Amino acid sequence: MRLFVTGGAGFIGSNFILYWMKKYPEDKIINFDKLTYAGNLENLKEVEKNQNYTFVQGDICNQELVNAQTNGADIIVHFAAESHVDRSILDASPFIQTNIVGTHVLLEAALKNKIPRFHHVSTDEVFGALSLNSDKKFTDDTPYDPHSPYSASKASSDHLVRAYGDTYGLPFTLSNCSNNYGPYQFPEKLIPLAITNIIEGKKVPVYGDGLYVRDWLYVVDHCEAIDAIIHKGTLGKTYLVGGQDRTIPNIEVIKNIITRMDADESVIEYVKDRPGHDRRYAIDWTTIHNELGWSPSHSFEEGILATINWFKDNTTWWKNIKSGAYQDYYKTQYK
Ligand code: NAD
Ligand code: TYD
Image (cartoon, rainbow, N blue to C red; front, side, top):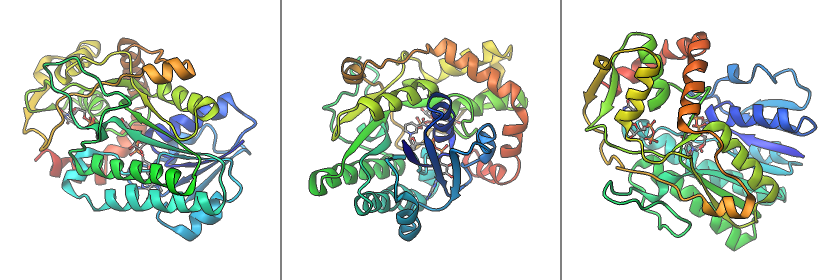
């Protein structure tokens, strides 16, 4: 199989490429990535010399280049996006451009080149927020209700993918997954930010009352879900993908990390809340389980331990990121 992967130098995309090349060494992968601040070829050192792996630096908004590069692919696996809610609040423009316009460019290329399959990777944030006083989960029938520029742009991209299926017969699958964590996650997101700040002896910023709840999905479990969808998923369908543990408030996530790292709770610093902050996310992944036999195999306890160990063992990776432009972002965001 020839896979055209967008955003393969980012967190989930690079985990996916490493996973795929190990499991399916005969397959050929083109990793098409613009290398924004979030893209890092260091993540792919293990495969960079593999003859079945090719890296192409490019912007998914460039129709001519995308048309040329997707020609001959058996599948487009679309990860590329601006992915951080806080950055979308500071400046929504790149989110509109990459997440909406870029997805449209890819859809056009998929039609033009008659690509037999298009898998779109999206988020549970398109569904909005659940309340703390219920045990409801997002299901296949939950209506869209995005609250941040990030989630609104992803919602828009989901609608475009489905519209291309309905209108032009584009053969697609779509997945909405919950918060991923694991190796190679950019240290602007909660878990890698907390781990690396603790190692550096810095405070860990907690938004608002810290009682926001996320559904934590270990990134390898997510890669396995996409694998199942690509090989067995029904065209035209959406699959919801989530983790084993859906009830841990942010403050407990941070305390868990603090305990495991032998740090002190004095590192916790409550800061101003995020505007439009979604209270709770939780995924009902019954459909993908019943239909494709997938379920997340890592508990939060296992996943967080593996993640902490990875960041402890790979300090050069994140220290390089945290110097330079990252400092400017951090000052603006946490001033
Ligand atoms: P990331 O920010 O770590 O990586 C994004 C990658 O896309 C980077 O390599 C970047 O260089 C590339 N990119 C950005 N704009 C581009 C453009 N215009 N053209 C080509 N490449 C471009 O993101 P991630 O966390 O790996 O997320 C991957 C996908 O999964 C995204 O679509 C995101 O919305 C979705 N998702 C992520 C999470 C999560 O918890 N991280 C949860 C649900 C869904
Ligand atoms: P984040 O990792 O940004 O993912 P998302 O916004 O996509 O869910 O944030 C996860 C949760 O952690 C979210 O409720 C916001 C919160 N958070 C903090 O409390 N402090 C921080 O410094 C960050 C980045 C996030």
